[in-house]
Amino acid sequence: TSKAGEKEEKSGESEKDETDTSKEEKDVTKVEKEVIVTSGGEIPWQIIKDEVEVLFSTWSSIVLDLYELGVPSETIVEFSNTLDKVIISVKEQNKEQTAIYLAKAYSFLPEFIKNSQIDQTKKKIIETKSHVIISYAYVQTQNWDKVQGEVINAEKKYSEILNDVSKKQDSRKYNINKGSILIQELKNSLPTKEAEIYYVKYKNLLEELNTF
Image (cartoon, rainbow, N blue to C red; front, top):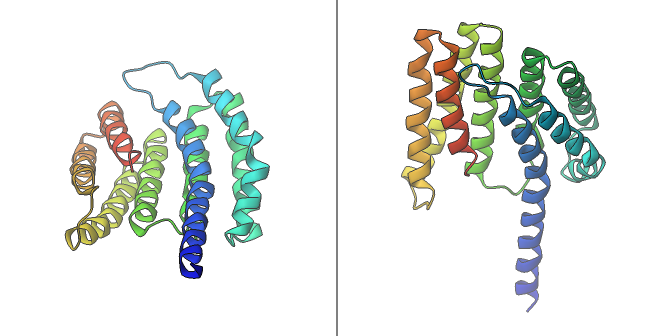
């Protein structure tokens, strides 16, 4: 009975860790998703502003969760400062700055989940997404060399996931293989240096990675 109780308690802790660390991931991803614009579409700034404010309203409870996970206080403060810059750039409706600061905010997530009980595949997915999102920010500044560098980094991290699933049974294998194909499609679109083509490939890839 004691072992069963201990197992149940560990399972509860694992679920809590995943909930705590995925909260900020989902919030940042949700805001970032609204910034994606294809074919000259209008950016829904009011929706983005509302979602950023929701993120800020839950920030105090997220901070406590991060402290419990052992995230250094200076990292939490830096992330908080980055969120301040996000909301300022959103208020100014500055697409370029919003993309840059959202990418920076997302880049903190791999550090946040380092000590969590989330499985290794999920951790590597988040790291992959971080590189992909940073590549999006560089598209805004037309720095295609940096875009390519981040996409290659995403490809390298994702290859670790492919190696892992090839050695074991994983119900996510189909989606993981599909993600690999979409990364290649994104990479292959870069020589054109056409932002609209990149956006389509990027959007498809992020939607697939967000299913994990």
